[in-house]
Image (cartoon, rainbow, N blue to C red; front, side, top):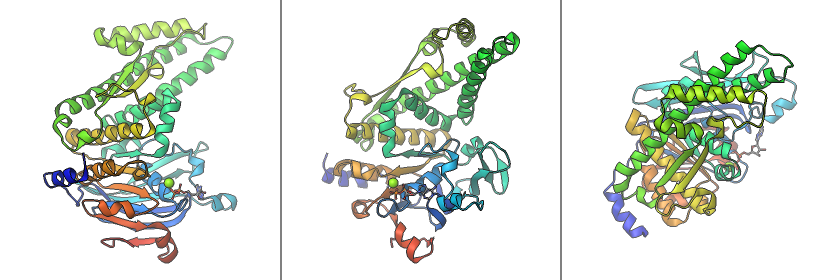
Amino acid sequence: MNNNILSLKKNSFNIESQKSFYIEKLSLKNFRNHENLNLNLENTSILIYGGNGCGKTNILEAISLLSQGKGLRKANIENFLKHEDTLNSEYKAWGINVDFVGPNGRFNIGTGLKNTSSKKSRIARVNSDYTSLSSLGKILNISWISPQMCVLFLSSMSEKRRFIDRLTFSIDNLHLNRVYRYEKLFRQRNKILMQSSFDHTWLNTIETQISQLSIAITARRLDLIEELDNLYKKELKNNSLTEHFPSVGIMIKGKVENLLIDKPAAEVEDYIKLELKKSRSNYDVFIPGPNNASIEIFNKKNNKNLDISSTGEQKLLLISIILSHARLLHNKFNMAPILLLDDIIEHLDKKYRFALFLEISRHPAQSWFSSTSKDAFSQFPSFIEKINLPKIKESFNGNYHFRNGDI
Ligand SMILES: Nc1ncnc2c1ncn2[C@@H]1O[C@H](COP(=O)(O)OP(=O)(O)O)[C@@H](O)[C@H]1O
Ligand SMILES: [Mg+2]
């Protein structure tokens, strides 16, 4: 592939500057290094650029929090409040507020700290009504790629599982709730087991719920992987743009996954319950379930596993998964996700940069890039609004109005 071929192909694809799903207004208050930031945007792709540490990733992270979970940095809630305010004993709240526009209209969505309870947690509001974080997924979807993702991927299997769980959440909004509940039940069970004598009926109830959730979580993950696989086989196979990113295979292996192939769910559930019972008195017993599943991600063309791929190859696999998952959501729910692409350009060579630019140009939802410079984006094949973050903080008091170009 060279750029000439790509520029020829470019004409045969629907390059669309105007996005059907976009953030029209973003306001951050006391969020990390942004005391007051207001961006007024339009339905185009966005580039936030500026030197290291000016707060680009913080903006992307804020957007990622318009979804259930800990966001793009997997941060704890205490870290979000702007430091000076934490140091001043005076209490200030932090918050994120957006106007999101999609085919179903305009929604004002906010999230911030719930300060009434002793346990710190996040709350969400849609058009001034309180709502659960999980139900935000019915209004908008958000996906991201960050430089830390590959590093985390290699370091632990649990990170791979979390990644798959986040992708699964987009096709079933209750999935993360199930995962959190599963973990909570395990903690409760461990507490009970540490007591010298325990209530067997209560333990039975907890273990029944754990077994049911094991099946539900595993089944939803397998559904996602099957849907992605079908997409690669049917649609993306003949797509001359996506072929530049590798076709990715994902496999989940584990006892429960194996059993579900040819046994009814009820039978597998009973098996898990039995194993849980056995492990009550013996901590060494392996407990089959979603937290013991192993996930393999590989390039379908050469069967090379993500774990033994180069950093560059890993990035391509990751991009491929996120782009195909975005396509899946659009096909399935007519709901393309907002894409957050943190520092991604720096890690791609020229041809892959351009391939990514083309994919993003025809993605029906707004994408947000962050980069230290805007230079590479002169190649962007459709319109992209380029925002110089340090400049709007210094010269415009943190208030930005769409410029139709860049500042
Ligand atoms: N809670 C916080 N309060 C104030 N500043 C913070 C907070 N958390 C992070 N920062 C600052 O934000 C900056 C990093 O922002 P980041 O968005 O990662 O920059 P970049 O533009 O390089 O992506 C650092 O200077 C860091 O000290
Ligand atoms: Mg950054």
